[in-house]
Amino acid sequence: MCVMIPDASPYTRSQMDVHLLDGTYELFRHFYAVPAAADVNGREIGAVRAVLRSVLSMIEHGATHIGVATDHVVESFRNDLYAGYKTGEGVPATLLSQFPILEEALEAMGVMVWPMVYYEADDALASAAAKAARDDRVRQVIICTPDKDLAQCVVGTRVVQLDRRRDILRDEAGVMAKFGVKPQSIPDYLAVLGDSADGFPGVRGWGEKAAALTLSRYPHLENIPKDWRDWHPSIGNARRLSTSLLLSWNDALLFRTLATLRFDAPVFDTIDDLRWKGPHPNFEGQCRAMGSPDLFSRAISATAAKASREN
Image (cartoon, rainbow, N blue to C red):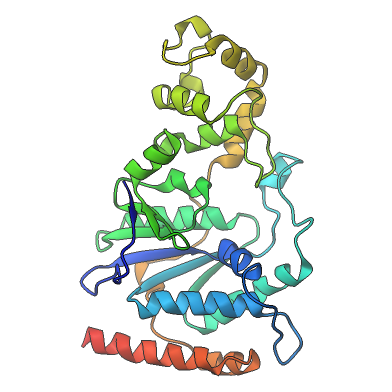
């Protein structure tokens, strides 16, 4: 189901939840939401500081195991598969330049970071979610991003998706309510609909309603009857949809490959690697360079609070 997060903290010390954060989304979101700011070296760091504050807020509210995935470079292996796939073209240089700064600052803050080059940040989140869910000590894996691609990783109520900006937590029932299909059909759903954010167009004539009606009954493209007369009568315009799909069959399969997240991205060895233990000594200097010594003070206070909870 899809629920609103109450004002009270959703984290309790008796639970071992894993929080996986989409650092690319967070950096983009804050870049367009906060004023520009420069560090002592003249580098733009406004969005970096905002993301650090956001992650610290999660820790202050009780998050214990955290991993952050970023797109160290925008291009990935998918650009080799499809020429029209998204690139860094049009992304402000002052935004792109903050990725390595954020990655370095998060590591100094004691947070595990996965800067992706061959894979994408979404692949790292998918890989980390699957690996964390296999650990019996984990109560719940919370993927923190509104990105619809990550809906394919949701499993029951064990692996869920959290839109932190809107305070909406979505489990498997919530994915079905939003998209009309189960999580495992999300790549097929995106294949026929297309994804403007990732740069592929989908199949001509297919909309959200047609995709949901068809893929809720036939979970994958291969399950859809080749003869439109064999389609379930609840699906309207079956002949037109079938003809369009068959004419674009190879493209649809390619688009599904683009939309399918990988589970073999390098992430962590053991869930204990994600446990936040406090900032490293160099974090203080980084905070001062950014003109935000309060970030270091908050991290130290969070460390003390964590130690108090565990004693």
